[in-house]
Image (cartoon, rainbow, N blue to C red):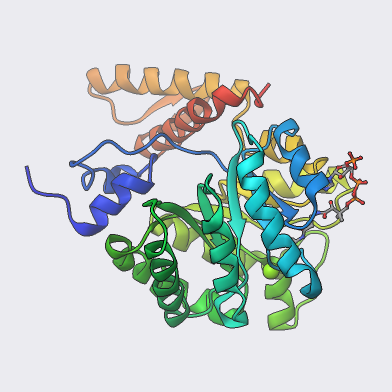
Length: 336
Ligand code: COA
Ligand code: MG
């Protein structure tokens, strides 16, 4: 059997749900179980009360924020608080990620030091406003230097953010470089997140409730992330009291191929997590389709009719996606 390529080894470590075309890379080791990030909730790093609430919220991923959710004069307070909270709070099933400031801001190094001061390191780091390959290289060098100073040998899930026209244009090159850096850096690439409000400000667009001004950018983020087998996290809805429009927007994002969505308020968590989970009816449909497909293959039929519709190989792949996602999110019990 051929040895897996470098990209293949990376995918093995980072991608539980590799597409069948990528699966052949994964011969060396079993991928880790898929970690759903249907809702990715920001919590300002200086707000102890909100951080202490996280374990009660049944949220897939909580992001302790050092960046824009924290006022400029509260950055030090947020860092000290995050170090302490990482050690004191049991986040339960929730993945804990820290969002550092952008490389460009020159605040990120102090954020990294605060993270690495904790005994309980977060499982992930989120890097905002990644506009260029050089910024990612700088981040990797800084993270390497900081990790060299501690005893532990962490491997962080890295979640990058696209938040500008440049970041969007350079996304492919940035992700390629991230895979190149993996062998010599303490991270593995996990997801790409679309920072819609900074993006709108950057291109001079106005946010509308149906987000049509962002359709091209969202599709480009999904397609590029998926080309690398990564999770894609959709835009945030800042109008957190409008739960109906959140539900519509979440369902639309899920249909576009996003695997999750950013949220800012506990009210948004169950709505978003449900929208990014297949419904019980859809799972029944998918399991039935897979079984029917296998039967028809044995009878030598590539195309057949199932529940009134023509089915062939692409429908099988979609049904397999549904079943895999349902199995991945089942333990949280949030699908009911
Ligand atoms: N994480 C955890 N708990 C949160 C929360 C969050 N992001 N947002 C609100 N809560 C808690 C509140 O503390 C409150 O709990 P309490 O009654 O026990 O105090 C409860 O949920 C209801 O909150 P509510 O009173 O409706 O909202 P708020 O006025 O406290 O906060 C925001 C509103 C928008 C300021 C707050 O949701 C927030 O800070 N969100 C994150 C913002 C952010 O990080 N932005 C940057 C990324 S886009
Ligand atoms: Mg932003």
